[in-house]
Length: 183
Image (cartoon, rainbow, N blue to C red):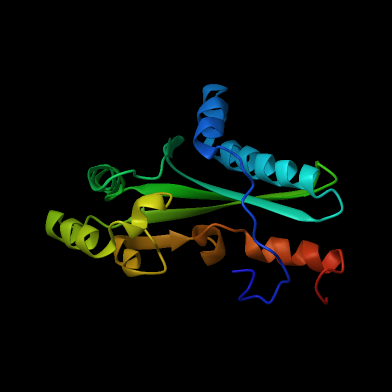
């Protein structure tokens, strides 16, 4: 998304053990929204400590139904079960972005989109998994809206960018304020 928006950047792995961090933060009772924010901050701060003169962006996304965070499905059976749980229901995608400088956060934004899945047939679910597995294994919620996954939905409320994993428009506003991109 940053490349498409022509935002100068360099992508780097933060080195954060996301699963361990998620388990620890979830044990503290964080809501899915706050979990996305905390994970984004953890990534940004960790990398910013290594590059104190850089503006570091950390991002994370958590899908949730009824305040229950949904993980990335590790196998096809888990994806089928997760999509079956979401079928006919509304869930949220919480996408967080945190910018850190000198090892501390200086800006943050969390955006939430609400997505309602249609009551699709078991046959459609199997066809979808045949077409999209294993690509969706690493996707929050077990789908890719930018692909065939759009056929899972009856209604979507919120930013397309948020659903893809980054609250891009608020981030662009901040980067313009800071002079990183032209206003």
